[in-house]
Image (cartoon, rainbow, N blue to C red; front, top):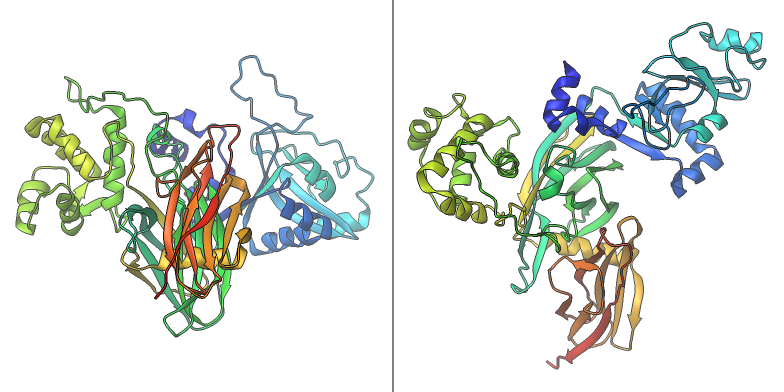
Length: 531
């Protein structure tokens, strides 16, 4: 039943094929989950210095769910494929039951959840390495034919590609809706930027370990990736310094993935959690063709792309995450359409006519509302509504994208949500990242151009530091770049920079659909201002 429900959530069983174990465990438990790739350079270093083994033992002691994934792709559904019980299956996850150390031996007890497996290497049931002393200390079950087996740590690292961890625990949990939106820069209306609509404040009275995650809609849900592919996402943690300033204390660099997570211990103080994105992907794909979509056919069936768009609209306005739109939430939706509704009208016209609870309209009722609206107003009017809501004529989401932010900690946290759009918080965060991690791009007697580079997704962020005595109008020109996209939809940005100040200019990213890209960024001073 659980598998059936999980498949229905994603659209069909095929969408579950080839997934990531840590993502499934996160979905099913709600607890922080992550994966450690043995090919990652940082993990290689932890393996070499012995810290990774200590990490695995600590996970086992905490009672966390652990599994290990083999490299390659699974082949269970390939016609004519015959399983070999003497080999680990490619693209498959194996449960880790125990992690033990005895007489200097690092041992891992593993189970193949699909059935039998005969491991014939070191620490197999017939291995001479099992001395009476080790057997007495560990008490291994060596005669069971249930797919369990033991491996030494070195064989484990050679045989598997990654370790998956789900931190199952009775956490204090916070789960809040968030949204990335495209807006005009408050300092220059000609420049568009993408930022988190809200920032999240917490006050900590004692040292507290917190797992903070930002979670996007799963691309594996049927048709989602075609219209709402993953944005690059990251997390910045800022500490208030008491003089209306903030300092960057930790950062999860941006990456293109379903979710990102940061594990941080916060000392007593006041903090701001700021979800981040370059926003480069919040747009219509550059090579997208017009599809002339009919929203509904003659049998009153929605076009499948329109149906997932309705789902997305519902998610954006379901701020309380309770799978229904209250009067306040529906009123916000209605105002985006250019319409007004009072609470009495909401109850009479919406709750009494569409599938609803006594508090709000359900997703099913919301779809009924859209079906009636098409019949009553026609598709041209509905496309106008969709444009107001941030979708183009082919139903690409080009103005906003929702996410969920989670926090898990041992002690209860009080989180305050505040509007970030009318602040310069995102800009100040970008400046802090440039100041802490930036590299020099160019330098003259009056300025220094700085950039940061996110290697995993080939993303760049640019800024200019005014090293001269007078204000300047600086320009960064990326127009000679090829196969790159930019956050403000412009590849030439100019800004005023005060003496001694560092200003953020723009983000750029290589197109993931292209094998090669050329990055070009030239900084010049257009004017020195004499005051």
